[in-house]
Length: 125
Image (tube, rainbow, N blue to C red; front, side):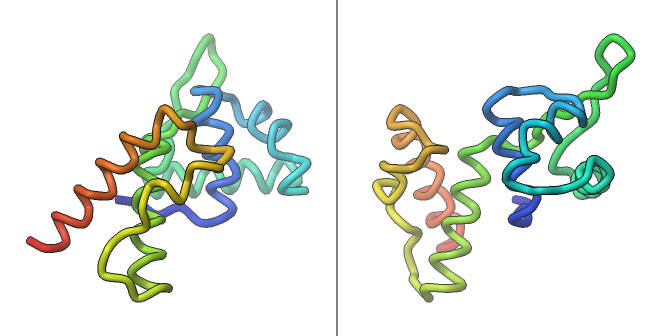
C-alpha cells in the first residue's frame, strides 16, 4: 500500500471527492490550501503518476487524473502506520476515531473498520 505525502494527500482528497479532474481543475480546487503555482501542481501530479498514486486518462484530448488507491484504503494504511510508528501501538486505531472526519462519512466507518482489522490480521501472520 502506497503512503502519499501530505502534499499528495491535498490533491488526492479532491480526486476522491470528484473522481476525475484535469491538472487545471485540481490546481484550481486546491490552490487555496496549497498556495502552489500551476507548475508545482503539475510537478506533484507527475511524481504521483511515477509513484503509482494516480493515473492519467485522456478524455476528449485532455489529460485527466484518477486516483489508483481508494480513499479508505489510504486512510487505513496511514492510520495503521501512525498507530505503529508514532504511538507504538500493537493494534490499529479504531475506525470510531474517524467519526467526526470531513473525509470519511458515517456510512464508510464500517468499511474502514474492516480494512483496519484486515491490516491487523495480515500483520499477525
